[in-house]
Image (cartoon, rainbow, N blue to C red; front, side, top):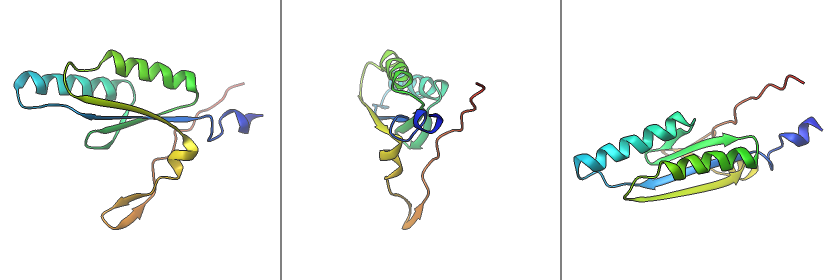
Length: 112
């Protein structure tokens, strides 16, 4: 039962991909505000304009997607992608020409 509760098909990764303008001082301020909101909500930087966050359930992922929608800047393109931990684990990641291991989901302790 416990293994099926947190299996890699039920746990999700939410990725936020964005391309925001930074030509004016106001645009840069909006960019920084959006980026800080992602970090405050527990997202980590995967690439320069790609942030990701692990969720233990679809409901939890929806909460974080709603927070991203709430923090959307007035200009620019933002994509929100949710994939299962299994799909995320199939991604090949390279640093230069060397393959590197992807990010591991955080451990969650269950008290009962």
